[in-house]
Image 1: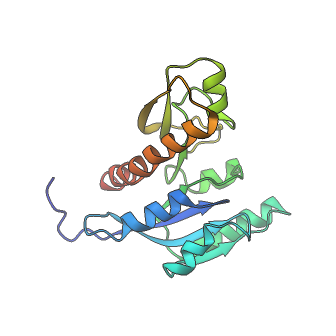
Image 2: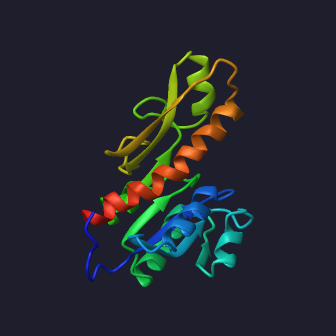
Length: 194
C-alpha cells in the first residue's frame, strides 16, 4: 500500500464502560508508525471503569459522564468532542445507547464493535445465544452506528469457529482476540476513505 504523504492522523475518541481491553489495544496500535489515527479522548459512562487506567498510563484525556440526565450527559459529550476536534468515535464496550439526536450530530462518524456476526444476535448475551442455537460459527463485527441497535452498515467481520466443548466464557475469549485484530484494521479502512 502506498505511504500517504502528508496524511495527518485522525483524532479519535473511544467510549468505554468496563475493562477497556479494546481501548488498550487501539492505544497500542495508534502508537505504530503506520497508524492512521491518534486517540485524543476517552469517554466513560462509569467512573470505576478499569479502562480509565489506560488513559492515565498513556496520558490520554478522559471524561467520565454521569447519565442521571441523558440530555445533559450527551450535551456534555458533544461539547467535549467538538472541543477536541474529534474526527471519529469508537464505541468499545460502551454500555449506553446513544440517542437519535446524538447519532445525527455525528452521522457516519461513529463505529462500534459487536461480538457476533451481525445481523445475527444483536444486543446482549451474544455468545450464549449462539451456543444455545447450535451455531457452527460466531465472531465479531465492526459497523457504523445508526439509530437502530446494532444495525448500521458493516465495515468488517471475522468468523470464529464454535468448538464442541465451548462455553460462553471460552468463546468470548477467542472472539475477543479477533476483535483486537479487527478493530484497528477497520479504523484504517474507514479513515483512509474519509
